[in-house]
Amino acid sequence: MQVSIYRFIPDSDSEPRMQDYEYDLPDDRDLMVLEVLENLKAQDPSIGYRRSCREGVCGSDGMNINGQNGLACKTPVSEAVSRDRLVLRPLPGLPVIRDLIVDMSQFYRQYERVEPFLTNDNPRPAQERLQSQEDREKLDGLYECILCACCTTSCPSFWWNPDKFLGPAALLQSYRFLADSRDTATEERLSKLDDPFSVFRCRGVMNCVNACPKDLNPTRAINEIRTLLIKNGT
Amino acid sequence: MKDLRPVFLDLFAIRLPLPGIVSILHRISGVLLFIASLYLLYLLATSFGGETDFEKLRVDLESPLHSVLLWSVLSLLAYHVVAGVRHILMDLHIGESLRAGRVGSALVLVFSLALSVLCGVWMWL
Image (tube, rainbow over all chains, first blue to last red; front, side, top):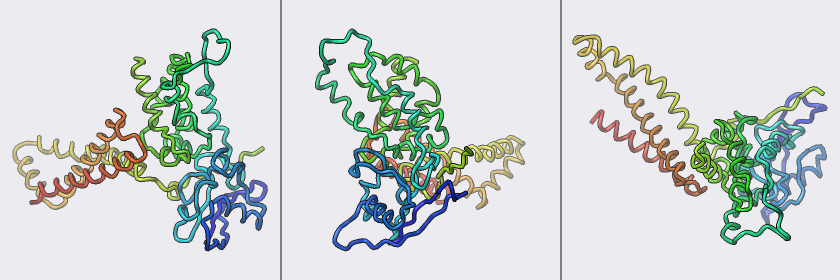
């Protein structure tokens, strides 16, 4: 198999380039894309990428694999490879620091903007704030996000308006707190989202749902926010 | 430090899933329809030019060039409307799941293609 990797080393490269490596796949088992990268890095230590848990929990190794965003540790080579070629590029739309490592500052700024923490101005109870099982269930499919940025960087609305549109990951988190029965800042949260760009730049392309390695659905969360904004009469 | 950071955004290297393709075609068909509206306005203005102009236009419209143009406009319109209806359904929270998104996109292509063929049948048969 040929592995083609996007290379950019700021000290020596003025432009990014693709570098090809030959890789012999084992006959007896499938590998994850990350394992291929690890083995190639043993041969060529200059290849740069992020990784940590190697089991789809930390969200560090999000990258563009044969044209599609995903986690290298959770993507089997057999699923990704096409015509005996594996093409690895950094996540689209974010500045490349080196090789497959992107600068996520923009992504984190969007996350910050939705204030991803519980806000409750009622007096603090002696122990924890309780929630019914039904209310807790409303958070399923929202809280599991690992912030890998696979969804946001696959979104055309994010590519064209990274500073104004919040992007699927941040909006999923926004709805996670809007939907939380313990959060009392719903009005304030909605008023901060009520402009033509923050939410409404979503055009329902659904690339985010397709990219999410945790099978979450940002499109649905965004539509719920829209419905809340409309019901709120803003 | 000089900012030398490149951004990877090669649209030909990024694989769009089916709903993404349907979405970009929706936008392209919208732009083309806007351009086509100039052609339709030209036809309308010509038809208002008097009895002889109207008759001439009526005969001209039978020509293969105009037929194909009009059929293209109808096909674009069919696609744009069908894809737009899908968006309205999504606004009503119908077809939001990954599977429904894929099925819905495929249905948009099937329906609009069928409408396009029907337009052709209506015009030429």
